[in-house]
Length: 410
Image 1 (cartoon, rainbow, N blue to C red):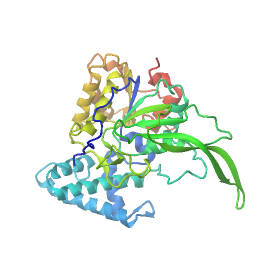
Image 2: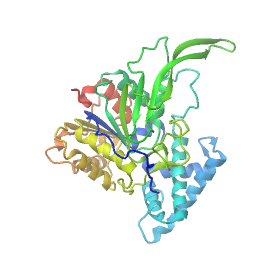
Image 3: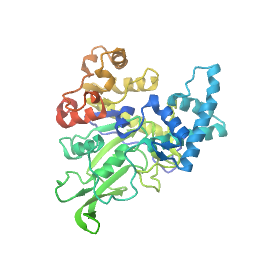
Image 4: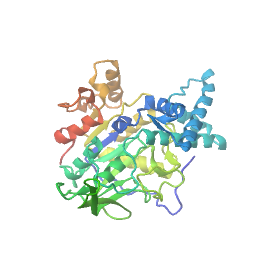
């Protein structure tokens, strides 16, 4: 399963630029897009396979085959329960065990790949942010928290000189798709954006996600026989062109648009579309096993070591994730300029053991003298549903209304 770089690929990475702010996105950050959280992910995959439909929409024959095969593999792993502690409804347990089974065993390698395809399909089937084959007939209403993130970053006080670096544990393409959608606009009634091009930098090869705004004429239906033509802009994918806003986007566990065999090269499909065999790393995978993976993790480590503020959204830092605990310690340990860490998580707004245990997990990663700089109660003058406190929506609301409480401004 080892991913190799092509021989002609530069295996070194230029020194990472210093970013004052770094945002770390966990699974909770994709929940608003409909993607299930880790504890319910396998149950969702099982439900799709058993019911043969998502909601009331039947699955395609291909999806039935993929999810059915993955469910069979999961059931076959249940035999481990007689001797070893193993939960076949836990995605991390399944991927970790399959990755070890695949060592030197071609059949088990195929099982791992089948499970990866099923994960990709489950994410896609549940995701509300769909891949669009072509430019929409009319610009999409930019109303989700993800669209609002791009609106704030590309047209707000952080634009150009203080954009954050993004680090994620998620495989999905929610941010890529909503960025692409955000570059569609009509001239009438829509302010001219500050930034006309943007690049999400994956930090390896030619696979960066870059787009620019180009003129476009929309044909908008006004009735059965009436169509109006309106001038505006649409997004265009670009490659090897400098953009006005470059945002590092470190996808530490892989991405649904990175081909397993050669993730350094942009595939023939649009970069907002899932590839057939995506690169997804199992939780126990040695993150420094390949030049490619090392480049991504090293880049994330460097930006964290230079950050002033770190904002964590939707990540609980579970005790089982030993690798991430040491990664955070290695990242912030040498950072003498680190000012504060802000954690957004719904569990932290509850007065129970779960909230205290999560706080303890974070506090144990840092020195006692720094613990007072960890904010577990981010700005919560939130006028919406109180249940949304600590969610990605809450983070966006705080970013829009209290940016200086979150971000460091030089």
